[in-house]
Length: 187
Image 1: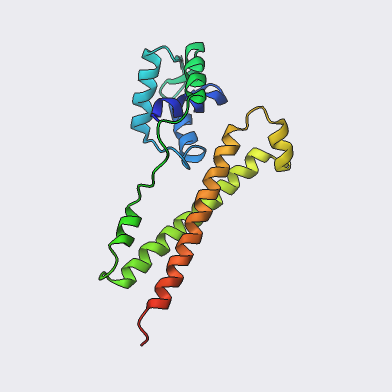
Image 2: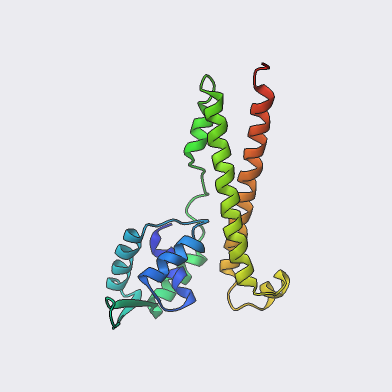
């Protein structure tokens, strides 16, 4: 998948500035697609040149002008075609921590424990952010009600995937730490 479709999907929420889109990537899309602000701004330029989005300038007092982006009909059609096509390939895990764990035998056990504990803390932090986002999306409604009545459920469904992913990361970290503790030399 390319950044192109992540940006087009983010614009389904409506008109947004590049800054607002970078915040959407930080919060709503971070569980499955990351992009730096520089990558995002370059992609916005490409999408505008390709006619998939439109940009308009908003004049501001005491601040630089900002550009607001919206999907064009061509952008919606391209995004719909992308959404309907099967994924090119299944997701593969590419994780530096797993390489470190693969190579841990003979390494400092305390260093190994520390990197796993850090990953667990990271997962807990992401879960807390995702839960805040979930609460904001639900806005006091039960999940079933939201899923039945909301205009758009895609963001919620991807959030569910992010929550499940981080919960599994946390379970894995806890299991690894238990195993490392059991293997620690008695002393």
